[in-house]
Image (cartoon, rainbow, N blue to C red; front, side):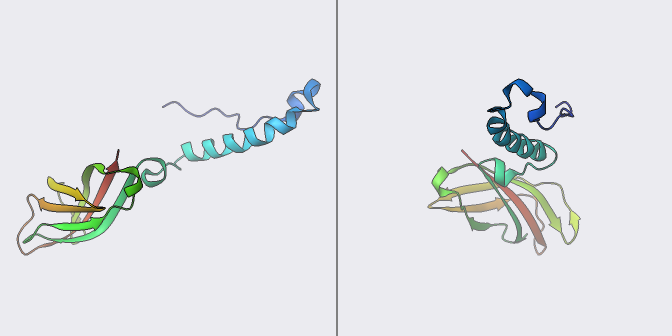
Length: 131
């Protein structure tokens, strides 16, 4: 993506022959542009801008590598994907393991997280993608 333009606002003074009505148009247009400009400068988030939910800090044991959590976006229908994006053993990140998941009645169940060591605890962060 290229850089955003330096011009962030339209000014009434730039349209002197249209002074009677242009301010009414430019005010909401400038509000929109300010919001868009702000969001495109590191303000976009997964949860606010996509049909997705970041589910973090779920403790998982390597011995029984399963967990479940409620999907809060049931009004959007069933999720189309669940992705494990970070897994920590203590404070050390481990390679992202594969997961097996299912969805029923607003609850996502993770039935298997491959590659976790028995007897170890992990802190996992998931992204649930809506569709």
